[in-house]
Length: 516
Image (tube, rainbow, N blue to C red; front, side):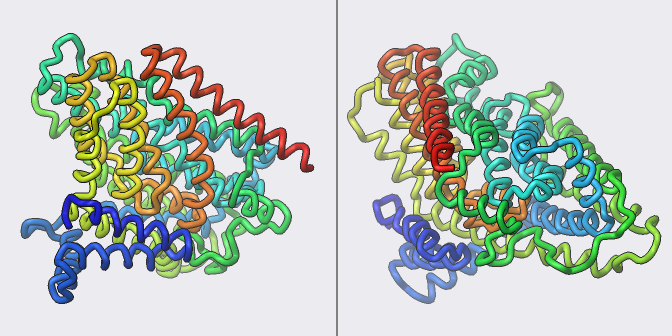
């Protein structure tokens, strides 16, 4: 069943179950089991062995420990401990009190969250978790639901990093582009030049970023988001009371210290940012060889190790403040355990997401979807639209933007260079855009999981509330790719895409206003 239509059935089953049951662990587990059965033609023993091997492979690969995965999981545990220390010290409460005097409206709080997402563009993982830690005290005080906070985080993290050349995503993409240009003997373009020229063609990323600020300013609460926001404003419930345990939710584990200061929050967060970025630069320089440039640093940096180092440094700084505070204060051990417990739901989801990603790889789901593109006889004018659509479906099914980049960018380059070279850059940009769109729609994406973790939101609540906004941005992007395919004019296509977003936003705002 590898590389056939059957290879997409486990992914479809998982997505349907998520929508019907809203139980992400059950849905992921079902997808893993069905995928394993397909791989081994429903032989039970071999299928169970496959499931164990996939789980074991998360931690051990080719007889060696998978240090990167351990580092990321360790960072999540450290993040839980950090959140607990920031809460116990009273730093989060003090920051909220300080910000609420300066950021006086819900609109301002939402806009500031979007701005934070734009500023922290180095890495999507780091963006998701850092913005959540900084913005959550402010959004909580203004009764902004955790689901909306997760949307702001997710819809700024990947879109801003995918169009930033100085980021882990940008460096990775530029590296792929360099190989594609050489393989297709394209000498009139350089990798960085190509990436920069593709930025205004990444219609989905630009539309998603614009939509974030329109949602913040015009209160565009549509679909499931409306219920979360109404509950937050009217009842003060930032979380859906019917949701399962959420990452970062400390509940009533302990009372915050009454003498908390703003620096109890800002200093550990500052240490997290500085230590992580410094570690990214150092690890990138160590593996860049003799020619060290800004791009080579971010292309070769060890993100997981850097996150772990930054997390450890920030927890140690928060620990120092804990010891310096006067009594009464919660015990060190209790704070650490409660913080770790809050991260377990995110870790369970991440482990299962990695497993089903591996299953999808064995079933060759991505290869099957890519062959559809290669085998189709289509007009060159439709290439950008088609690559956007296929990349979106592939990222949705496999849960990986980077994996979709690796599979679809070479195909897009080859097809465009053979059929119509003027469609090369639009097609490559469409792959990037579609990959981010699929990433926003799937519950098994790392960034989707970490966005809900950073916001302290229930994971499925985040997926379902973000989906309508992702679809709006995708429709505008799809129109843009049709326009650029038939006209070849980037400015007209970008304008058409953004006009649709603005028109949709104003229409929704008008409808919301007339209901009130």
